Each structure stands twice: as structure tokens, then as C-alpha cells.
Image 1 (cartoon, chains in turn yellow, green):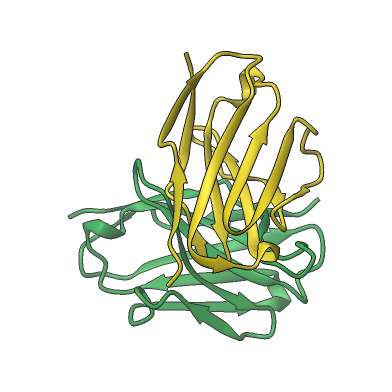
Image 2 (tube, rainbow over the protein chains, first blue to last red; image 1 turned 90 degrees about the vertical axis):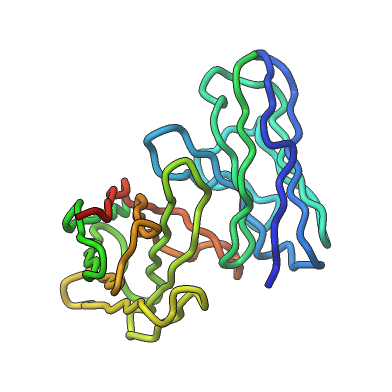
Length: 104
Length: 120
């Protein structure tokens, strides 16, 4: 069973900063099946990225995804107030434990 | 616009069966996998299982012995039954549509989620 480990657990940042979130798989995986989600408190997750690097419809271009093999990243080029949330990576039927991006 | 809506009891007694339904509106019901995912309070996301519109199912190995997912394509809805529940099954349960990911697995559409508490 593949395990996805996200790091760091929590990031404290200011609006306008650039942020890179990491998702590491316990073994090499197909990037076709790698997705990223954003979840705000009390809401369902929202798909941001699929296929490791394709933005979902309506997702701002400040969000980008990259990676292959075991290492994947989600980058937010410039944090907006609405970006402070939990972020999860997903491969096939497995989710990472999440990274919290909080306001510093 | 595809919309999903979970319904069912918010409180279930230990050892009883949790039953939820997801109603789907907008878009096509056919040719997609329909999925249940849960999130325990303060925890991450756990995939429970899915059902193809034709009735083919897949379940999480850790829950397979207690889970049944069924579909009624004529009514654009699918259901989850989880037997012998314990406090560990307390969670927000989401229904979601799998697909539209260029051959991969992702979930573009989600229900709002329903909190199910297991307690006597």
C-alpha cells in the first residue's frame, strides 16, 4: 500500500508570500494519478490540480503542481487571504495527511 | 453544474448500521465512478469505496467486511451502508464523483458532507 507523506505539517506565512508544499510517496507512482486539494474549515475539499500538474477548471494560475516518481510539489506563487487552508495530496485511493497553511 | 447531496441520520448507535444516500443532479450519471470518502474530526481523508453506474463496486480493504455501496442509476443516486459501527466511525461522510482527470483518479465534484456521530 502506498503511503503519502506531506510536509511540513504546518506553515505559518504572510499574504503575498510564495509557498511550496511537498508530497512524498512511499514508492514511485504514476503522476497521472496525483492530485491536490484545498479544504477550508467546514467545507468539502476542492480539487486544485490533477495529473500532478493540470489545473482544474476555475483554479487561479497562482497554483501550480509538479513532480514525478516519489516527489511532488504544490506551489502557490503569491498567497491570497483565501489560500489559508488545509492542502491534501491524493494518489489513486490514498490521501496524504495534509499540510495546514496558516496566517503568520 | 454537477451537484451532490448527502442525506441520512446524523446519529447512529454503536453496533448498528450507518446508512447514507447521495443524490446527484446535473451532468451525466452514467460512465462515472461514484465514491464515498470520510473525514474523522480533525483528521485526514479516508477513501471508503466506489460504485460504477453499472453497479461494479470497489471497497477499501480496511472497511470491506462492513461496507456495501449500491447504485440506483434510474434515480441518479447511490448509497452507503456501514455495519457494526463504533465511535471510530464518527466522521463527516462525503460523496464525490470520480473522473474527468485525463485518465487518472481525482474528484472534481463533492457533496457538502454529512456529520455522522456514533453514540448511544
